[in-house]
Image (cartoon, rainbow, N blue to C red; front, side, top):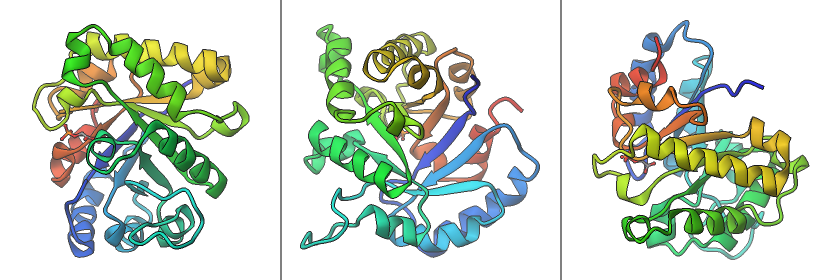
Length: 252
Ligand code: PGA
């Protein structure tokens, strides 16, 4: 089963709606005629509507960077899956390390958000990754094994069809320090094995596993050459249209 490469920007807390439109207008002609891959942008909530309208006909998916697990309720400052979807989001980034580190997202919350995304019919992109201290103490696989079990808790094989995972070593995010392709491949292969244990062979072979952490136009091709790396989740290098487009067109 071939896994269509998924090249996604994570804009974090950057860009207004107008700035998102300007970015997409600039990227559009550069992406024209590009096939065999899925381009995607995880944008701030406030830019989803304008970005989704601007992205129509470009093939770029627009997504959110977080959601609440409830459909509605007294949750000041939160956004539900249904709201993100109605605004134009077709995917959501869940459990990014910045959410885990600064906003208290836990594996348990990620699992609830994942269930809400599946129920609501948007693609969940679940992020996992070890810190530098965890890597240096030799705990990488122990940490990632616990994270994947916790974050996918309750998910069944039938409900995993749209699932995407992202391996984002915390020490590589925004630091300019990319994991080597060998380091990334080793973890991706491990995560695919865990998917097999948790959800069965089909989910293991069909789920795309993205790499994230200082992905740039000049390192994406080598990473994508590894057998278990199926895409990228890109922060800094996805904020400029030409750099984002070069990443989307990694092999062209
Ligand atoms: P970076 O961020 O590409 O700027 O390292 C990646 C991410 O946080 O998703």
